[in-house]
Length: 214
Image (tube, rainbow, N blue to C red; front, top):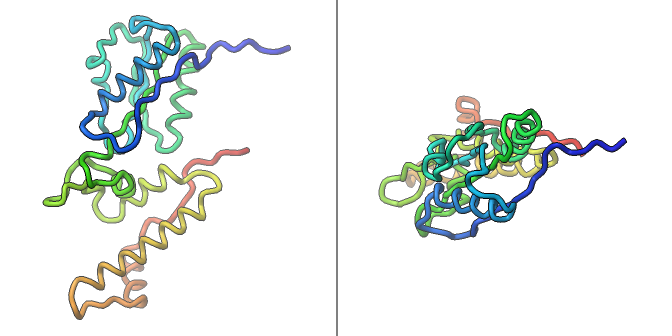
């Protein structure tokens, strides 16, 4: 006997994406929610659940409820499970609806890594994407040291992607050696010296963070 579904995705809202400057994560998130409500044929007053994911730049938070004027929410949560967040948000919303915690739940993600022209999104995501700017260059400072590798693994460490993670790890070693060698005219670092450094200061190894069985 087929089981009747107790929850479903009824609306979808997507804002413009690409090289978009001058907009906050809050404005993008609210636009996406409004588009999803319109797609579902719902009013703002119908929404009684809100699940939020801010991405790496942490451009939105729980105050999105107040910014959007969402009153009497029965469910409000800020979720972050790296690359699996979207799936977990939908799962959480489905369980909430099926168990009577809420009737209509918006799952919203917003991120604004392109803070200004000239700063690449790849640089923001690759380094962990903190919003603090490096002095003088207008680019995200990122997580200090090589901790940004863990952020990269968190977003891209999914089943069948280990080869790409290993290549990213290998290229990081090459880039580190390159810039250490350019510190001075006599500061060339060969691979034996770099390997000795890696024994003292090992890089986070590539690893799969989210396993999906197909």
